[in-house]
Structure formats: structure tokens, C-alpha cells
Length: 94
Image 1: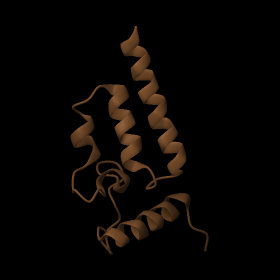
Image 2: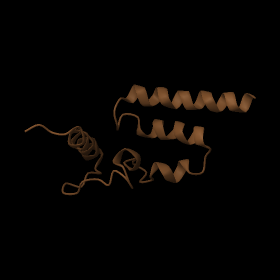
Image 3: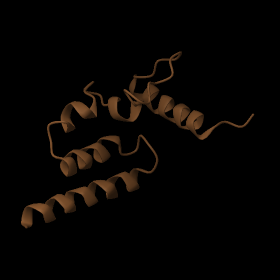
Image 4: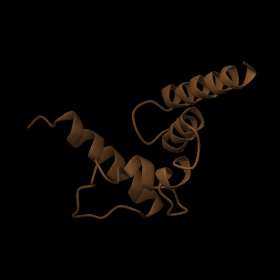
């Protein structure tokens, strides 16, 4: 049986979380309100609890650093963080 991309992503995240002890074996994550790639930090803090106190560009940079390696391509996430940091630098240099 072919798995959907969402199911494959869930299984990958579940496996990663199991390594650090955060997986719940019977519960699918709430990908809208509490996505695993934003709340699996060992501190127990969800990314939005930090980034909501920042401006848009810095908050997005932190978001991409926070989730790097937990969703899609780690290098892509880090490049996105750099893009937002560079944009914030340009805004402040004006």
C-alpha cells in the first residue's frame, strides 16, 4: 500500500521524536495548532512562544533555525533563515 506524503512525513517525525523521547505512540500530531517540527525542542517550549515577541523577519529566521532537520531539507531551512536575516539587515541599514 502506498503511503501519502503526509503519512511518510508523520512517520519520519515520529521516528525523530522517538529518539529524543517525545513521540506518543497512538496519537497523530496536531499539525495545525501544534506541529511537531515546532514543539519537539528538548526545552518543551514551542517555537511560537519565542517568535511572537520578535518582528516578522527575525521571527521567521528563528522559526527556520528551530525546525531545521525536522521538516523537509535542513539546508533549505537554514538558507531560508539566512534570507530572512539578510532582509532584516537591509531593513535596518536604510
